[in-house]
Length: 323
Image (tube, rainbow, N blue to C red; front, side):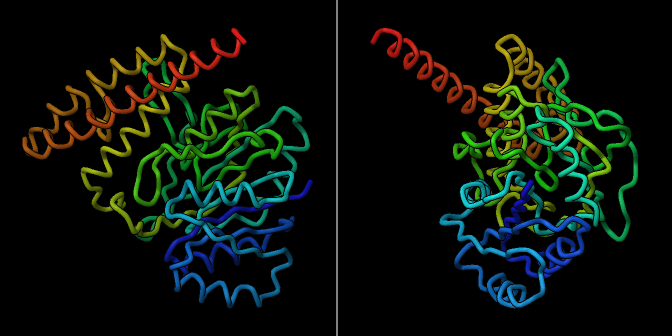
């Protein structure tokens, strides 16, 4: 099976250099690596001019995003990729030497496997986050998301969702799918990986997580409102919108109502409901109030848009049946 690797990048040439070096060191070289970059990103263009002259061992292609944002970049990559397997990693990640080999083996052994991801070993402040978690990529009955992709241990198993730094897809499983362009965000449309991988599972394919399919992840600066160190209220509202849109469209009707109530009443530290907002108020009422309002605005708008989308789908189906 031919392997295409997609690497969206923006203004992180040193990270991109490390990522491409790791791909050149694979025991099973990919057939092609597609770096998706913005045309105005001069620093990346200079780095790629050097990389194109390297002895890569694979075809290195540069794809113009055509528009800003990670969703646009990934969709351009999907459209341009020629492999039977489409592997995706971040520019600030470095796949371990057996990464591609393990991915190919997994797809070869399970014809119903539509997607597989693995652990991203996070390097942060001079140390590696090395805690262990068995529960990975889970949605609890309340709708609470348990990610833990960066901490997963144990055997390969089925999951509900994957993480964008380390996820791979069978081409035929995603032939009719694209990353959701409705998702909001100035740069990285948060939760786009969750939406895409859940769509693969919803289409009837197996979605797996194997911690041995590993990358080293060096979380780098983001050049948008959703900064790792200081997220703006607009970015929080956008993230909450994306999150609730996905839950509204991916969960069954009863489950999405349970999730809606749970996030409104309780929520999480990231997306506070009433309980978490009250707890946060101890450290500053104005800020806690602002965060709660931003999250609820995003949630309500997502719920409205998801309902309209379902209504439009129902009307289209009804019209088709009456023809």
